[in-house]
Figure (cartoon, rainbow, N blue to C red):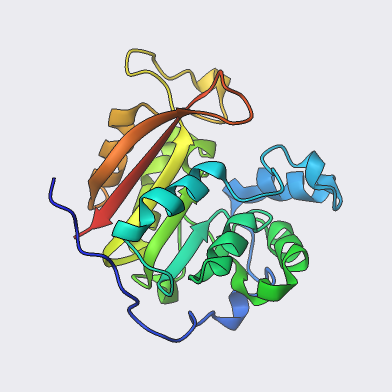
Length: 237
């Protein structure tokens, strides 16, 4: 496959953030209530948030080291979907990206701001299933790590459309998720997370107008090698 041109920054100024999105001053989406409750129960202890590892996602770090240089460059606008406690956003900022993170859970947004004071204003509240109009088409890189899989299958198509809405033309969408073999049927009783087969992931994003650039690549979860994971990069035409 012929390589796509490297994405260069579309704008030099920091992403404009609507004031109502800062510090969680938006209504909580119904599907996000479980996540908000988890962060509230954790009461400031990251060890009580099951998906928080206290560092940037290893699969994202590997992608930034190996794949990103041929697709995007530091300085590009990036957004982390479901940013949680903010470690992925902090990693992107450290590497020179003009990065923003959003989460459906207001408690997570406020917590991320406290954990990363140097980029505290880069965390906002927003709903992937209904992203704010001012975010549409603004980002050269959209990072989605383990959020799509956390949604019930009935919501996954809307989430994929949300990813496509965020990314700029010729921009990249990186998806990292729990995977399952193609021959293994999905068991709704086992979720969340709802593991995706590679063909399902590609179809979800293709139906939203995104073209597969690389993957899905299989790898084993760092924290639980018994779990299969997928990583794939998509491009918006």
